[in-house]
Image (cartoon, rainbow, N blue to C red; front, side):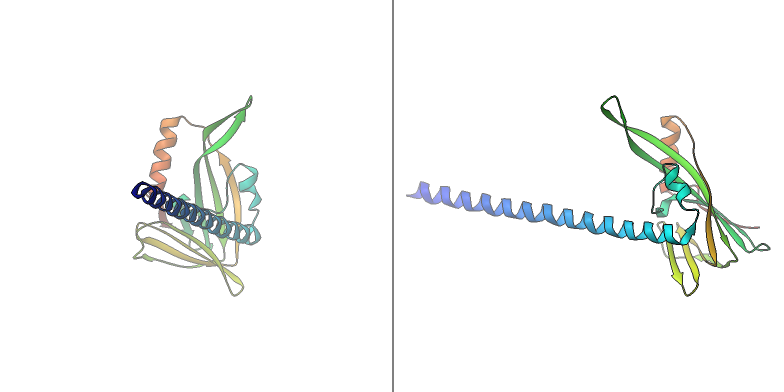
Length: 190
C-alpha cells in the first residue's frame, strides 16, 4: 500500500511542477508580447512624427531607437538646431543557399531637430535614455547616458541619413560594446 501512496504522491508533485512550468512559460510569453507591443507603439510614434524616418528602415535599420544607440549631439545655438547621431550595431539574420547566418550590421545616421529650446544637465539616471513624446504642438526629446542628459523641445525632427558601414568582427564588437557603455555619447554646444 505504501508503494501506491508514494507513486500517487510523486505523480501529484510532477503534475504540480508541470503546471508551474507551464505558467512560468506563459508569463514569459506575456512579458515578451508586452515588450513587443510597447516597442511597436514607440516605432509607430517615431514614424508618424519624424520626417523622412523611412530612410532608417529602407537601409536595414530598426525602430524604435534604443537608448544606447545615441552618439554625438551637436547643438547649434545660433541656428537653433540639434543634430543627433544614431549608431546601430546588431547581428541580423541572413539566408544564403538555404542556411541562416547571423552577420554583423553597423550603420550610422543623423537627425536634425529644428527651432529648438533645450536644457543640458546632470541627471540621476546612470544608464541610457532615448525618449520622444509630443508636448502640445511640439516634440520633446530626452537623451541621457551616464548621468549626462539633454532635453530638447523642437517644432520638427527630420532624419537626414542612415548608412551601413562594413567592418571586421573585432571592430564591430568594439563598437557594439562601446555603444552600450556610452563611449560615443556626447553633448556639444557650438
